[in-house]
Image 1 (cartoon, rainbow, N blue to C red):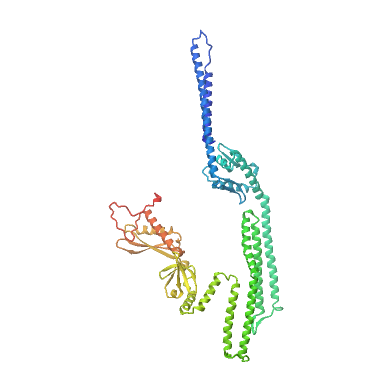
Image 2 (cartoon, one colour):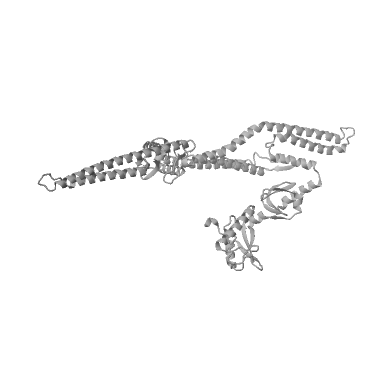
Length: 593
């Protein structure tokens, strides 16, 4: 039953009581005299009794009318509730409820309808925040949650905090009476608060703090122990300088003396120390985060970040062992094959082995060619077994080598040399916004042969490196990176507008534009004083030249807005108007009307 219906029933009951009291008082206010022939007022008494009887009949009729009205309204309210129930049943499978989830646990219950101007999403958020706030109280008593019933809403409360409110609409969605729904939701809330109390209790918090301190102290002593152990290892390495270490020689060249060997071993020892300390941190940091429930999910993420690459590396190494064995066999075979050809060429060069038609002075050049071919053959055989051989990088290298060998033309060589020169000259880098002749865009790729540019229209322009060497290029990004790129635009305003006002409006429009720097500050130059108007040039700094087109567009929009708000006309390039009542050129923003 709605609030309006209950109010009407209350008014009707009050009216009936008033009518009854009025009739009773009227009867009691007039004493009934005894009728006799000697009493001259007997006719008046009879009239009064008739009036009393008429009042009683009127009261009975009024009561019957009120009962009929009450029956009619109850019937109408029942029909209305039945219509609402059927409508909700038809929407139930298409309307998802908004769950109330506390601390990413299971769903407690759902909200389907609005209440008091709050959407179901807002009601769910408020209930969740109220439960989480109460769950962190040390003096929480979940059994103190109670239900406060009013005319059309049941509030589940704890002290003065309203946890959730349920109306008759919520009851229709749940398919149970409102009081039963409130009791059911109260039991769920009490159970959840008991879990939260156990999770956020004072002793549990002290225990977590103790674990946190214990991990920190343990990690500190592990660091100290690691540093002490590696200190002893370093002293042991230094003591090996004059006892166990000897210089490493390649023929007569001393590759590593004992001191260099000590420094190298000490370096590897330091690397090992940092790796062990890093491994300890990788274990202790997620352990610290897992102590507190607020950071427990972050601990799992950190463990995933650590374990996923390590697992990938280990699995990759194990899976790559067969390929590594194959590569080792190929390299070993080619090595001994080269030794065989070196021996044969040496024998031919010394004329101990003679081959008809093959001169001894051809031995060494032939050996160099054969060795180069064998190495190329070895690379070709090894290539499919290399890690990442199916990736685009290795395929690009093979394509490049094939082009160099097969296309030995002057154009290709010129492009390669130009690519090398461009690389060392550094006129631009990948990602820079440049202007090359009439092409403006971002450098997306540099190869030994060509350079590719993506324009603001997402057009890919391929430029040969030799063409770039003979052309003039402008780099917007390098200037923007160091000093800030100046974007400029011109407007022409009539002489009737003070130049200080124009400067202020232009600078305000620039400062409202995204990616325009406040420091250095925008400035305005007056480039010319024409016959009909002066020309103002707005200059503004930016460090994002990749958005030049968007910045210019937004800047022009802001210039129009600022001038229109001040009632200043922009006469660009030229506008002629006779002020005889014609409308101004100032545009009024329809959104502000």
